[in-house]
Length: 279
Image (tube, rainbow, N blue to C red; front, side, top):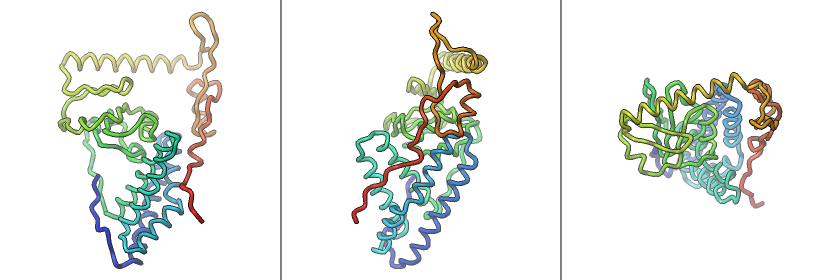
């Protein structure tokens, strides 16, 4: 989405009031998304966005820019881009990818400032093709209609991809600029497991894909029915089934799905690095 706004303003106090209102409105939107989140992992990531939005470093940087003559929009986005760039420079790839979360938070506030209204999605099943998609955009999707995501940019460990998996939405991310040349409303097969996209498939290829989908759904149903059975290899070797948790509140759900223990308890949702500030 493109945002068009002036870069400079001479009513500094009014611009500060506009920014504070937009930040509060953005926070309220995130709180509503967290309340309506369908899964724990979704709520965890959106809660992290709330923490990012409340970061005083962002507020100070945007305020300083506005006091130097920038509009609320320009000052805010300048602060977001500076913080996101610092995040991208981190050596840890996973932490560097959190820059996408910062920009997602930034676009939410920018949307309020620019009074942007999101378009209504189709009322029939569809595959969403975009340049990139933010985690909060994924969390808003109607999973009964969105059958897949295809993006130009992004990575498998980005929070938008993690949320798509948590919501059961097949996704192919980082597919390159050529996907934007696909015709709107054209038939497509999207294979999230293999990272493959087939545009305008033949009838035979379409039927084969539909059968593969039915087979996959049957395997899922069979796995659910046998989730409490003892896990072992064909030669009798016992295997412990453990779940990776976003927080301890998810333990009950893990047990319901057949987990016998905890493999990894994630902590990156509670702490995230901010650029050092010279004093």
